[in-house]
Each structure stands twice: as structure tokens, then as C-alpha cells.
Length: 418
Ligand code: EPZ
Image (cartoon, rainbow, N blue to C red; front, side):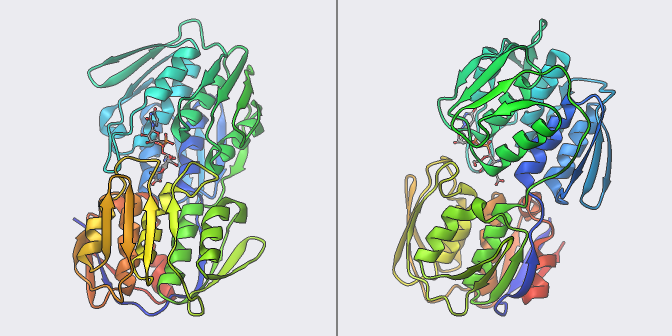
């Protein structure tokens, strides 16, 4: 089992390039199933989850060529419409092939994704919406069996709760459906907007991108495109916290400032010195006198749940009391017990956390539990006295391209050991 060995690092200094967004790449790769041709995707990050999606698409018959951050996907000759459990279990976002497969073949069999550390992650809204589009859905032996012998028909779907995945699956199912679909209470995340922009470039007819209600007019055919995906706002936010917690100074390149409005507003209020430029920012952690704060995670444009663990790590070293309310996932505090092993003082009550700032953290052996929790442990290891060993770092590699290769040149002391 791979581990990371982190020694207390010097303040992070230098320039870091943000990679393409994982949560944009995955739905856009799934969307290529709709195209009877090839498409070229650029700025695709080199991550375990991207490789899992490649394996899944290839198992369906896609021809894929990956060169650095370019991926060509050709789904002209799909050979089956069954997404097997052994592939789907590796990455929950595999469920995003359900909508396009059903739309393309009027038939799709996709393994139930199962839950993960942060929650049961049900797909009831995905299935509810597909039924509204005319699909016959049954569950058998842990698989979703979806049929639409006469093709999918547009309809109005009101999502009971904002759901990124459900919005994306229903977008992918409605693009080629007959007639008009309205997705009400749709997710507005930048990654959902990126998917819509990609689909429209292929010839889809989507209006209301980034709004509460998305309107899709079914089209007959899509065309081959070259598309560059957006940078990863969560990776960017992680490095911002890294500069602040180590009291360093980082220039972070490839940022769409608008995607980080809320976290930047919180940090400004906390006294963080951040210079905002057109597509990069300079974080001056050394001269930031940070005060405690409170955050509540919400769907975009609210505070992103994917930055909650990283901010909790930052709060743990800020004098006074900070508060976090996690309103998106039911079990996203797995990092608390690990941070407390390093000497943090964090108290959990249901969906709320109180963090009492401490002077310092002390290195120890800890364990990653989910993707964003693991990166918060890396941030803690950078500033904890002594040595921190993080086990189960496969969670980390799902969403961060060998993070040590980006942080060590800036002064971090991270070793990957088997
Ligand atoms: C996406 O997950 C992201 N994953 C998550 O990022 C992110 O945390 C999440 O959106 C929220 O922004 C990808 O894009 C691949 P949801 P998703 O559907 O689509 C409940 C990361 O670290 N729900 O918006 O699964 C659900 O349980 C990952 O990169 C239902 O109840 O999230 C959750 O409580 C973690 N039924 C809430 O809604 C459903 O059918 C929001 O989930 C669907 C969701």
C-alpha cells in the first residue's frame, strides 16, 4: 500500500500550475458516447479517475488515444452497452455513462455505483429523471437496467434537490431526445456549465446554462469537436490553502477567478493577502494575519463541499473558534479524527464542526479516507512538527496529479513510499 511521508516543510514559495478539472473531464468524457465520431479533449488531468473512465469507455467499445493532457475518444463502433461492476466500483462517476448509453442505444445496463466514505451517494434523482424522459428502469443483481425502445422524449423534470451528477446524466440523456426538456433546480457548478458548453459546441441546443432551469431542445445529430476543459477550481483552492497554512508565497496559474468567488470572499474576510490577476493569483501567506471564520457548504455558487476539509485544516491553526456546517454530504467529516491525531481540536456534532485553533500540529501516522480529506492531511503534514505518514493515498491520486511533484519544487518535503 503506497504511503506519503511528509516532513515539516518550509513555507511554500514559487509558481504552481493548476491542471484541468477532474469533475469536468469525467462527464465530458462520458458525453463522447453520444457522438458517432471522434472528439479531441484538451487539458485533461492525468488522474486515476480519468484512467478509470478511459477503461470503462474502452470496455464499451470506444477507441481512446491519450497523449499527455490530450485525449482522443472515438465512439463510432460501440460494442456493448453494459458498464460492469468491477469498473464502476472504482469510480462512482461511472454512473454518468447511463444517460448517454440509453440515449444512444435505447438500452443501458450500468452497475449501481455503491456508496463511498462521504455518504451513501444514492442515484434516485438520476433514475427519477430518466423515467420522466420515458425510460423503463429496473434494478437487478446490483445493476440498473434501462430501456427506451421508442427512444427518449423531452419532458419537464423538477429535481427535489440540487444534484451535480443527476443534472449531468439528464443533460446527456436529453440532448438527442425528441422534443424539449426542462431540468428545474439544476446544478450550476462550473463543471456542469463546462459540460453544457462542450455539448453545445457539438451541436446540442442548451439554454439557461448556469441558471436554475436548463432548457434543452433535442437535436438529431452531433458533430466532432476539439474542446479544452476548464481548470480545476478545487485543486486551485487547495494550493491557496497550502500557501496560507505554510505562511509562504505562491503564484497559482490557470485560474478562473469567478469559479472561486465564495472561497476567496471568505479568505479576504479572514485577512488573507491575495492579489487577483486575470488568470492567476498571488497568495502571500507570510503577511496574512488570519482570523477565525465560519463556513457552510452549499451547491454552487455557495461554498464548495470539496474545499471543506482543506479549510478545516487551515482553521485548526488559527487562534479562536471557527465553525463548519456540511450541508451537501451526510458523512464528510472523516478527516476530523485524523487531524485530531495530529493535535487539532475539532469537535463534531451532527453536520456541524467547531474548530478551536491550536499553536501547532505534531506529525503522526494517519489514514486517508476520501479524496478531499486526504489532501487536507497532506496540508496538515506540511506544517506538523516532525514526520507525518499518510496511508491509503490511492484516495489522493484519484483527484490530484502526483501532488508531491507540484509541491516539492515549492519547498514541500513529501516522499512517496511503497
Ligand atoms: C459531484 O458529486 C462531484 N463529483 C463531487 O466531487 C462533489 O462533491 C459533488 O458533486 C457536490 O458538488 C463529480 O463531479 C465526479 P451530487 P455528485 O449529486 O454528483 C444527494 C470530489 O471530491 N443525491 O451533487 O455525486 C447526494 O447523496 C467529489 O471530486 C441524492 O440523494 O454529487 C448528496 O448528498 C466528491 N440522490 C447531494 O445529493 C441522487 O440521485 C449532492 O450530491 C443524487 C444525489
